[in-house]
Length: 412
Image (tube, rainbow, N blue to C red):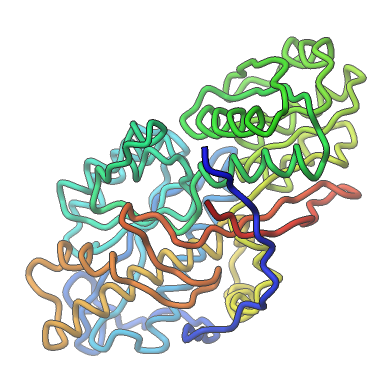
């Protein structure tokens, strides 16, 4: 296997052409499907995310950030003759709900693109629906490689299955290896106990992490699985304690991850728990009754607050009156929405200033060529629809809050 290294980014990201303005409400004269007000044509950007339930903090951030992108485009008259609005649907992190939402969005002829979902398992249920309708889907959070490269990607046989699927976040191929390299090389941990939640995202991430950790010379001293929405993980915690592990890697989301970390520490095993972007949320910390300083999480990209390209986004989001924070995927959600807007812009420009009859198919074609400087850095897509941006960050809990400890660009 070829050596993979981490190159620390030392150059400062420069602000690109994307300029945001203070957001305001859409024109109240909007008349709906065929007329967005002032003779403009309405284009709807669908949003699918868990807007209620345990992951709603992330879902609301996704919805609000896409809403901000639409409002910014309208304010700037980004696409002359086009008025953007969003239609946000709640999938509650349930695949069947995501599929129903995809069907609903496809049924709305004004929808020319959709942002979401959060969960890779939900995405699997939606991709086929969007593909049949030529409707572009851009996820700001899905990380399972199979979604874009097919089920045989791990065997070196990557094949794009859905031409309508794109994402603005790095995959678990990158994130899992990044985490393993940090835990082994930087944190100096050599014996890890690996736990996952049996879901598409969690199990896939844990498998990639484990393979890379062992390749580096570390040892996986035990594995176990937990069930989503359960709260008693004491048996797993006892197994971790008796294994002699010096660390734990958890593939899953923050509701279970926080409780797992708590219960491991209650056994007396004072070792760090590490996970992916699924646990990178304040709720992971608040779920633990024990002090979990020292726990780690990786997340896609660099801290948004540290990016020069994100300053205007943050200012506009704060000025927008949104009740929920943009959370972990806000920047990626804005960029996903803006990518759809740029694809629509290209299609309109190529058709004498108006939408063609086959607008959905044309937008999907245009998405493959989209390239701009976004909130999270350079936004463009490779031959699989995956982002070309492979920047990641390791965060650690310090004094009861997540603090970034290392940001890097992963390169093969």
